[in-house]
Length: 213
Ligand SMILES: CC(C)(COP(=O)(O)OP(=O)(O)OC[C@H]1O[C@@H](n2cnc3c(N)ncnc32)[C@H](O)[C@@H]1OP(=O)(O)O)[C@@H](O)C(=O)NCCC(=O)NCCS
Image (cartoon, rainbow, N blue to C red):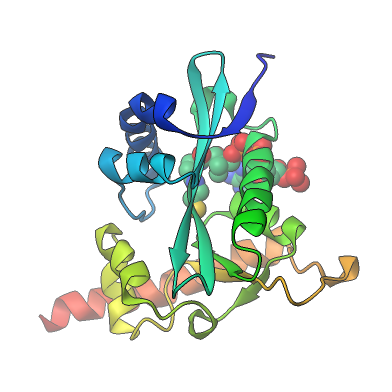
């Protein structure tokens, strides 16, 4: 197995931005789920601000994640988690997320950390880090954050539900509340079933919206 280093990205990593965006976009196509699209320029800004984490195996791009700051540092979100297909299923996403989580807590110690995702792997990782599932009302109300969902194929569902729910699950880590180990909520079977129910309910709603137009 090739050695992988996880580091805070900087100027020397700007050249990876294009590839990162391509892998994110290709993976979204394969999964068939919605995803907020990122431009290489946006990814580069994150790198320049010290808010991006990159995993490299020598010169080869292996994984990535970045921090977004919302509501005047009241909230931070860890977004764009991606592991290159050649490096999946060996715990790299978990390591990148953990690294990002600790970097973010050091940089923004009072900010609540949140994320929205449809991915079970991400829910599992977040649960291990102490995140809890929450309704969207507990997340930032910064319109810029929700504007990021515009390029997601499910955006119509989100707006039809007045930004209160969508196919993604909201998760939150509150640094002021210590998490007890026994409070873990992740249950793959239950979450898979919940996702299916939600998907079928919201997809029906989407069809209704199209029909009404
Ligand atoms: C999702 C993704 C980041 C996972 O990367 P990875 O390096 O293979 O994940 P890891 O090996 O660190 O796995 C972390 C945990 O999630 C679990 N997991 C991994 N893929 C999973 C899947 N498809 N479904 C359910 N659980 C999964 C693993 O079993 C592991 O659990 P464990 O700690 O109990 O062993 C990677 O598949 C990817 O880049 N996918 C495309 C982009 C994407 O979906 N990003 C998330 C957007 S929210």
